[in-house]
Image 1 (tube, rainbow, N blue to C red):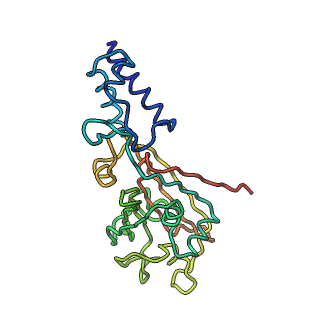
Image 2: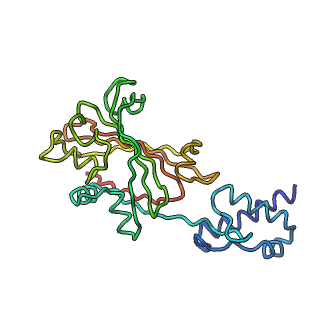
Image 3: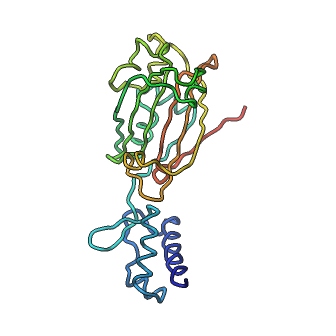
Length: 254
């Protein structure tokens, strides 16, 4: 029982150093010898503590037998109405623009475009009956070749038909460029986003697609975009690993 408590104390000491920034991504963890001497315990107890941190996604095995702090790209996302409009007018998505400004190499890969039955959550937000067919655009977002986000965009067929939203290709400026284009057939101005956030553990397929280590949660974000008449024109269903982003929301209160 004492050794069981001790291996957790060892893990907590290293975890605190990682979360406080004293150990940076890519840094080696304290060696087994150092930890054995520091905590006056056995090598087996030390290994149990390191294994606990690996299960949490904080440590990975480096070259040889030494564990290192898990390297990962961190992207800070700033969400404001102003920067959304600036990025949209530049022809770049907010994700790509924010990542590039921080020196990263973003990429969005289109996985599928087609029609699927609307889930109850998507249907409610689009003002439709559950099971009604909707257009979906499925993508995976990457930063420096590391998968960062799964993102499914949903649109009413009456809105999307005859536009690039239904075509199996990437769209310069993104879906919002199509929706807001004054020369397009939709011509809606997006004036509000409403986000519903859920924190949970990933499904097996999500963990595989996003390379999520054991013990790391994901954020599921349902973002609904509304036009100037109050009608929902898009629902984005995103799954984001909890260890790769820092979000900042600026909310103007009238």
